[in-house]
Each structure stands twice: as C-alpha cells, then as structure tokens.
Length: 246
Image (tube, rainbow, N blue to C red; front, side):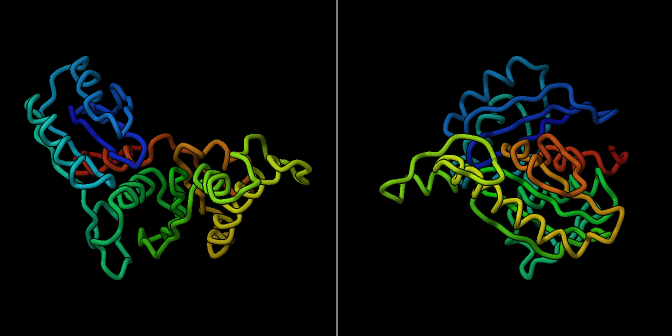
C-alpha cells in the first residue's frame, strides 16, 4: 500500500492506495494547523511502509510530517517539480519554481485525460493551468480563491459584509453582488484561459478543489470534475511504472 499526502494551505489530505490495483482503500483530511490529528487517522489504518507527499505549507510542517511518519515506520518521499515526469513536460522558465501541488495536479490531470486541458484547482487560491495535447504545461494563472476574495472585501472595506448567498444573473443585494462578482471573476478567468483550446473537441476543463462545486455551476465549459486531483496526481506518480490508472 502507498500513503499519499497533500499538505495544503488549509488542510492535509491523505489517501491510501492498494499496491496492486492502485484503488483508494481509505481517504481523509485534517486541518493543516493541527497535523497531530493525522496520527490518529493513520493509526486506525493497516500498517504502512511508504508515503509520497507534496507540500505548499512550508518547511516546518514538512519536518513535522517526516517525524510523525517516521514514528510509525513509514518512509516519506516528496514529489518536487521537475523538468518532466509521468508524461508531463514543465514549461515554467524555472521548472523547480512551480508549486508542487500544481505539478501533482497536472500529473493527475494527464493521467485521467490524454487530451488538452485547462487544469483548475479552486482552493484557498485558484490556479488555472494550460496542458496541451502533448502533455506540455504551457503556463498558468494564480488568483485569490472565491473565499479569499469575499474575505478580503469584508476585511478591507468599511461597509461590505462577509457575503453569503448564491450566484444571480442581476444581483440586487450587496451579498448577491459580492458572491456573484467573485464567482463571475473566477469563471471569467477560467473561460478566457480555455479559449485557445475551445475548437478541440477533446479539450476539457479539469476541475478540483474545495470551491469546485460552486465554480462548476458557473462555467460554460466541458468539465471533468475530480475529487482531490492532487492526491490523484500523487497516486499516479507512485504507480505509473506499473499501470496507467483511469
């Protein structure tokens, strides 16, 4: 079995994949601020020996995870961005600068879909990355996520609330205006980035992240919704040498 760990800004997500089939046997998550909670969740599983992880949460958390797993006899390896891996070519000017979560998401998207794609991770930040038909990452965008957008408006203006509500076509309350504006901004960025691929019938928007459900309702694009795309990328990277996982 292989333990996959995605240490993000808000949560540490984990999954245990079977060695032979690659199927998920168990998955869970804990708050990034409380990594010790991961110990109890892992202790409830069968003993593990290996883990593959990616992190955007800093060196201190990485050291904590290494120690936590070592106490349980689990050897931890890190997925780092590189010039190419697992069918994906990294088009960043400095490939090592690409966030490990984005790299894992691109690997996961390529493992699940072999056509061109715009890969969207809608989390604390929203990342929008273009993957061409040959598996080359051509570049991408980073913008504040939906929750961060509305929080910034509430914290940095005197009159605006922390808005709650739903998208409406013509907002007529302040909450509607903020929620709809934030969602339209997210969707507009994704749809503009998708335009170069729009004529290719194989092209998909591969969408994941905590705000994926909200964003999916706004996007007028062919979608491939994926739960925990970063974990999928880690799983694919761990088992790519034995079989392609669909």
